[in-house]
Length: 259
Picture 1: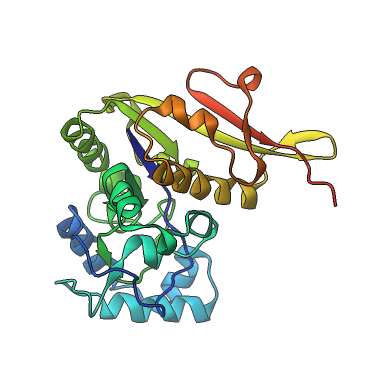
Picture 2: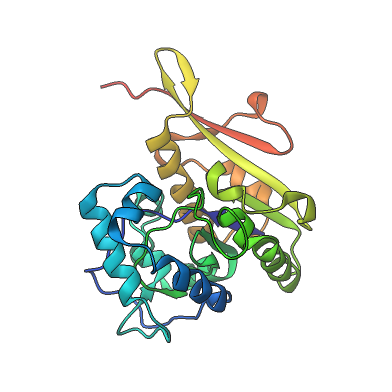
């Protein structure tokens, strides 16, 4: 069983990683090729491409200029500790035990516009390149064309090596579009998290993102290898809702908290 998550735009570059162990990303040569092209863009071009402020564009132009291989713990940081958005706050990987961290490394993969597919402990240098960015490159008009079947091939290799045929999709639509599902040698399960608002259950982005991280943490804490056990997920008040669920889409709901 393998989980896939989206990365985060927010990065934690200041806090040191809580563990020394690290790995190198499988697709770093592809990342280097992409960065060679990305680093040619001036801050103003980045601002227009990514629809970000001049300040953020300048920061990322500087990051692109500084990006270089090889990655070491002195110039890079493990991805699961670098990413710092809602998903990763729910996951809170820095507080997991060594055994639980090993579980993450074996059972979780992070999709990335620049790095393709990452293990949690793969070293990365700071960047911003969302998968949906229409960045024209040597392979096509966007990042989906740049990555082509490479991410899917690596997922299939990972699943085969683990003798597993189940992929739990906890990534956003933007990122999961980089996976060619028809070529994927796995059963796909997509958990969906809904919160009660005004008497109706809806996907509320902030809560749903956090819940994705919470589910991965729950799996690591309970060392889950059978997806059926995920139906017991109950972190922060979520419960599995069979009536709303299908074989492919598992719905978890949370009732409105009374104050």
